[in-house]
Length: 369
Image 1 (cartoon, rainbow, N blue to C red):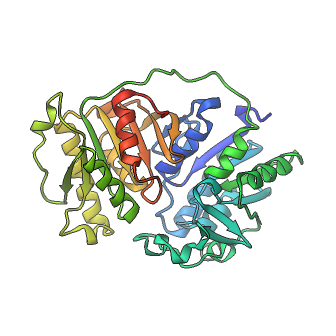
Image 2: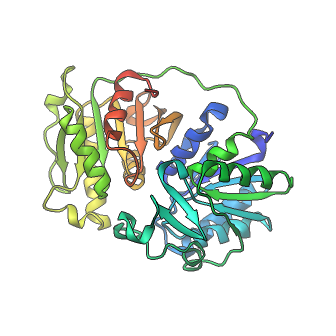
Image 3: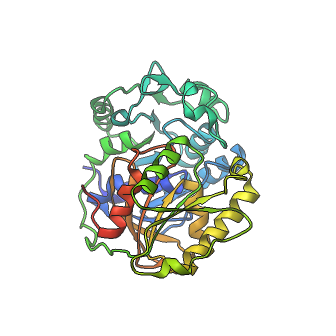
């Protein structure tokens, strides 16, 4: 078994860090921080949107800090969005030479790799919604080609079309008892956690919320379907743009319905990829959350979560688990919503009822169906 002290965990954005924490929650009860600090069990580097050279330098420094740990798991996006090659290259520069096992597949939600290519439900990712990602569009389905865009790193690129493929990969790798850097997504994390030494469980108490807000900065069509279904189920949709904040006073009623704050009104959503507009809208959303007395928070999108948390003074959170494979949930530990429950997911993933599941957790404190 892998001792906790021998395992290093990091991710390139906040939703990824929560996903990773959730994968190990049963055995570790990790603390996730919004900065690459020393006091969390999972490090969020928030490097997916950085230029390649900045990302490489940051990961080099983190690699030096983690060099004493024989097993490193670096959470990456399942379609390798961001400067993945530069990040892995920087990690190796900091860690020193070790094997790199790269497996981004999550077979149980249709994300597989075959012949070194990325597929979603059997379709190359260049023919899916990932090709239209506003910040990091999928320009290639070839894993080696994607890595070579930003860095040069020697690694074993593993095909995986089933969860058993990932389990065998981890089992065979660990049998060699040599230092290794695993780079992958939730599928590989779940295959690895089977080998991690159990730890004392985290506090199982989950607070419940009456004033619930979900903040979404995702432009993915999948997220828009999830919003529509939640609204059909009784949630109220509020558009948040970079200029005006809708009134929050009525939301303080104990019987107020959940509110979905969608960043960027209909007239400006097409420009939300612009960093200035995006950050202004996040600032307005944070002001609304505080004015409304929100005590249960859902977030869609890693960049949205990161910048919203900064504006609410949230730097630490406890992840208790995940539902529907991709929705992490737990408790906020500091800032304006200290002690309140949260639920979080990436914008490109999740079933159509994902936001309804988040609302249910915030209302009941129950993550399982």
